[in-house]
Image (cartoon, rainbow, N blue to C red; front, top):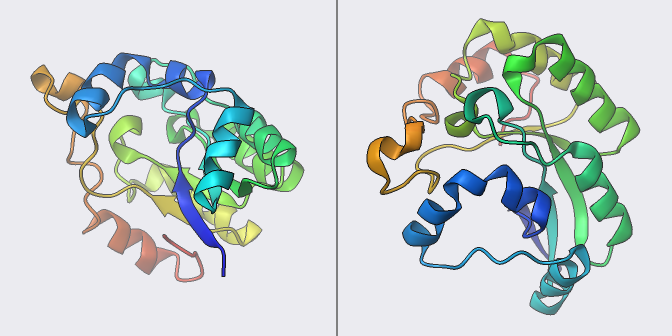
Amino acid sequence: MPVIDVHAHISTKPWADSLAKYNEALEKHYRFKVTIKTEEEMAQDFVQAGVKGLIIAWDAEANTGMPRTSNDYIAEVVRKHPEAFAGGWAMIDPWKGEMAIRELEHAIKDLGLIGLKFQATAQGFFANDRRFYPIYETCAALKVPVQFHTGFTGLGAGAPGGMGIKLKYPRPIPPLADVAADFPNLTII
């Protein structure tokens, strides 16, 4: 049975650019050096480890001001390296409203990504804020799962004021409990 990493971060330039202002804090907290690799080098890392990854896009522009790692990019990396990646997760910035829903539909219908990933600390939102319910309605209609980062994050860890990253957002209860109750047909990871 193959090993599948259902939440795999990538190590290429677009990802490093998306998290650039947090990289120093991440390096200190996790005690590693951010290393930028080509898509081919990164894919080889997965192959050599015997792992197939489900890689993740990144979009937290509204809250962080940092550029996104696009869903199109992630889908292209998955397409080019099926030996390393079993698929990819879309990520949309929930603060982008109707544009976010259009991007979600594009990521699933056109790009073939498997579902939607949120990082509420970076994106700065509570999952049970009803302004974001149309996103969950769309995911339920598309029959795709939603993955939520919960708990602690290394983003801004150890930096003064956490670099503005607030740990109040990724708490699962009540926000995710509310979403699960309000969307019983939505698969939540």
